Length: 52
Length: 237
Image (cartoon, rainbow over all chains, first blue to last red; front, side, top):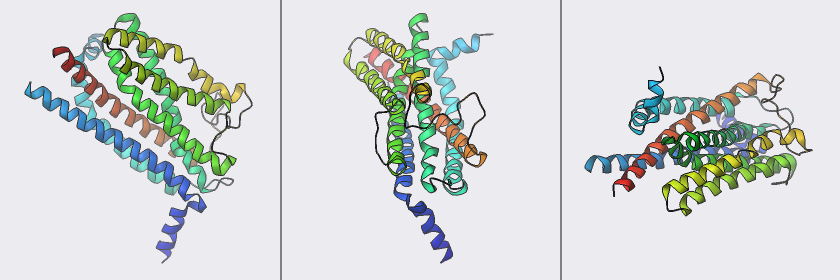
């Protein structure tokens, strides 16, 4: 129960949870999004180059 | 002695370098990002005034630093490309523009979200915020210019000129908090005096900055390889 209470405190972030998690979420989504899109584009272009 | 630099400046040499370096950069980025997230969210103490809400600083400040750094790098490389007709210069600037725009947007959004609980407002037209918004317009303007001019050489030259002219905004953003009365706080780290941030908050901030920079390295290298291959494909078709 203490662990769950601690986790809830962590998520709530003293009442600023919404603001903080939104910003961290935006950073994670932006970085992962860029990486995945570029990785797939790079792989597609490398394969097309191999077949030419 | 400068042979390695000339090899790096040629597209095949750059491709070999990027392919060799990318796995290490990706691993370094992943490691520092995970550690940085944990350190900034769980380990760094709460602020005595702002409480836990201040943790947005660990995203907002590194994103702001990167937005300025990327534009400056683009402007420097654009100038080198214009003067020495360096082939990889427009490849670099085209690859970096979306990343720079994304970091600038992230800076503005996280700053706005931070400003609402702390300043009581989502936005003010103060010097720092307005000049950062202008930086976003410069990035978007560069990207729009790339799509608007059909001839590649004219496109690269026009883009380079825009980047060089726009670089005057960078010192304006940095010194805006000193030159004008602004709501945005003055510099706490990037100043001639020692940083006025406690080490318990400074070190996770610096780690997040390193992580963001490694991420920039990863996507810049991957982006440049993609742009090079796309240019190669359109040249041969």
